[in-house]
Image (tube, rainbow, N blue to C red; front, side):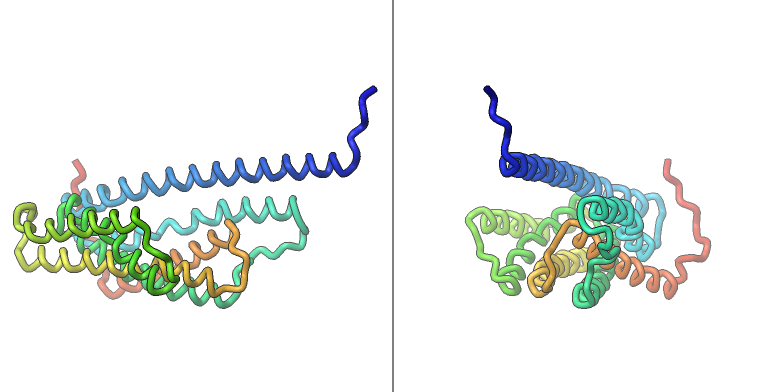
Length: 260
């Protein structure tokens, strides 16, 4: 004769199934975010460089486009809010971010906007292979700032990566004349190189600052809260670049670009 499962066994089984479902959802979100990050990191610089090769001159516009897609974040935020309403208390707040996180995200967003401009300036004057390798050296700066700000320890893997990428950027700096674009003056090339290095340094600082902000906040960091932080950061970065476009008069009609 079969035994009827007790209420405790049923409850434990439901909890286990719920945890498995959440784990699957986290993995799906992780895979989707990795795919989007890969497409953006690979395709973004190529499209930006193509714009400048075809006669584009608007550096502020290019920097604006790096974070101008921030309204897309509203879609997963709305889905996360709907999920919270169904799974938990229907009185859940739409906005979870507290003032400390908002101010920190806004400041980091302004730094990101400045970093976007320096990166776009470098891409406008350097071959994509050169600028990408220099930007890759940001791992070294990230590791240093992470150690200083959030006390993240060095590992053999991180040290090996930092040494290889930093050495590659240093070797590249010794042979900058060999890959200079046609018609590019030495002064413009050097400025573009230095601006790209500065962008790598600043971005290496931004990532540990975000981690430090997480640690200093008194909130539980959830996926939806991270999306809110990214939304605020991208909004202020875009606002920074929008002001730059207005000052530079990028909204006026200029020479038409040929793409083919």
